[in-house]
Image 1 (cartoon, rainbow, N blue to C red):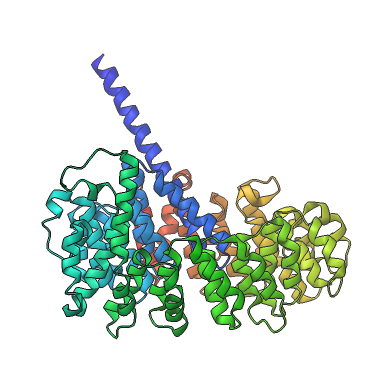
Image 2: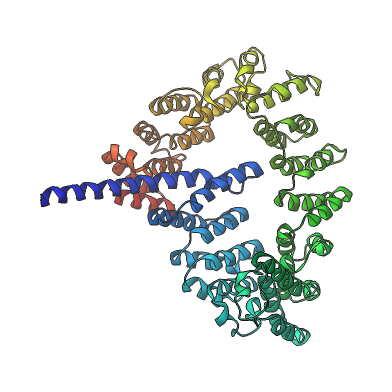
Length: 593
């Protein structure tokens, strides 16, 4: 009986380990897929990726294994050279999932040259529980860290004890009379003390709630609790907001620390009256990041109304985009027609940028207006990006766009029109497109492998111009190596690898061979490993082959299915690669069972 129970427990433990490993691998794969989109130019694409990852971070709950895996993935990515937007986003997620293990990573960004990164690092540490995060904030001592430390201590302190905290740090929970006494001598304070005071006032205004009401007060007659709380909160907020004049003065200071603290404090101390001041800071390029953060977070419908009025009146294109970007971050959808009208206007130089701002605020019904702007864009690269935006809006249904195309320059069968229809990839249009002599303009942009055979025929047809054959080959490689859920046709991973190998036989240029090897590394099958290793001895391709081997070896179950082949391949990687990150990965994958 005891032996049977022991065997059951051992089996259960094995299942838990297996499940945990698979779960971690799945999370790692999901993260790797999403990272490039965290800072995508397309705001919709960026939003979807960020929401997908945030859902994982928020859904961790008590799952210690997943929390550990998520923290490791985020900290590893933060060690790389990321776009500013990606760094800010990942730091924000550490505020949700972080523990003592991630504190050193977050703390490194407290002195970053980018204001938005410093701000988010401080906020993350303020949200991470434990003394380690508090010590990291104290050690830094910059304005963002000090402000975050005040917030962190406020959340952790009991009001009775907090009242005894020295000012200005104690301002968030001190009595109004005590704060007034402190503010009476504000003008005599050092710039550092003024900055700390404004930071603390902002925290106090943000926290007008029950903690303040728990401070012992003289008995009063009984009132309706909710009404009493609302009135008291209103009084507390009003008393704090009266100090906005000090924030306004600080925003004009020559002291950078005070100026930044003043601008950020306006989120809580200020209101619509401070919109011109903050816009002025943004337009002047002086503490632009801090002023942008403040305007993005400033609350009130009247703030949106003031910004929209300024947007409509603004003639300078750079200023127009700056205001539009703030309203976009405030998720104000009423600016969509303003953006599109400006994008259509004669002489507008940044049409694509305006389309990118308008996309998250738009729907399928707006696609025709986007087509109007697309016809005005001359740069090929920008045309392609605007086509992608239109394709996302219509979601595979080309009806409204197709109805519009006969009236645009060149007509419905022009090269440009077919390029756009190819991006949309409406299967109802495919048969008609194939009959056209310039069909390649659409086929090369198709979003799945339904056109793979047509592309391959063009790529191998020696009668076709070389440029067409190269375009068709690269498009074929792209669609045939898509993940299974995006392929659009039913073929096995083994068939995908085999068709890539055939494409390799057509490739004449090194850049095309490199692309094929790289894409083969994304197809999880032993056949992919065997195929890429055939080019291992080609010096021009060797590092890319190493990368493909590592991408395949990352998948534990695949590696286990052909352990000896993978160990041999990893040894080859270690024998030739000059990249330290490749060496680290190869050794790590070899050590996994």
